[in-house]
Length: 254
Image 1 (spheres, one colour):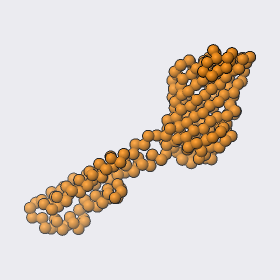
Image 2 (tube, rainbow, N blue to C red; image 1 turned 30 degrees about the vertical axis):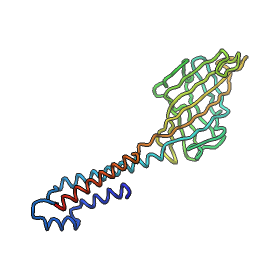
Image 3 (cartoon, one colour; image 1 turned 180 degrees about the horizontal axis):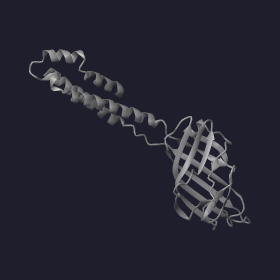
Image 4 (cartoon, rainbow, N blue to C red; image 1 turned 120 degrees about the horizontal axis):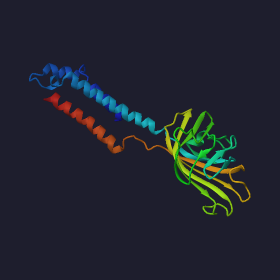
């Protein structure tokens, strides 16, 4: 029996207008049985069963609305210094394979809008916390759905010594970070944890901070850990409801 069906059964069982209550009430001669249950007790049990069943059902629905998957950026340009990065508007697009939830809506070549701030997005070498009130790092909209990535923290490396994959004599910016993906439109998805990777490089001869260069970026979402009770929890819930029925049965047969 499903959780909701069991709940409905218990509610109906405790309906004092049902025949099994009227029959016992008419034959009761010891002041026990149905008369032992007050109206407030019966009402409380009915409400408890219904609320618990609704909570379990709601959790099951939320489970399907988290975001998972990945996509990459192509063609974007930027300028950066040792303390900030500025994205060039209207240059980045979705590039390459798209997976998971994103694949339902996004296709190769769809525009991506990156954050535009006066003075650029600030950073320092090492771990950074996103400034309060920072708009989404990027958004992309296609087929009626808008995905946005809100950054919470990021690690930045300003590289000038030819390490971490940066070419000798070049200057690179490598950033990785965490945040949350949101999706609104056709489906309003639950905010889901995500990560991103960003790299940009000035080759030898380019002027750092004033020359426009290209960058690459990718992002992924891990979905939301469901709050739906595990099978063991659901079994305990069902056992509890059956226990209520057992108590009622003993009282009716007393």
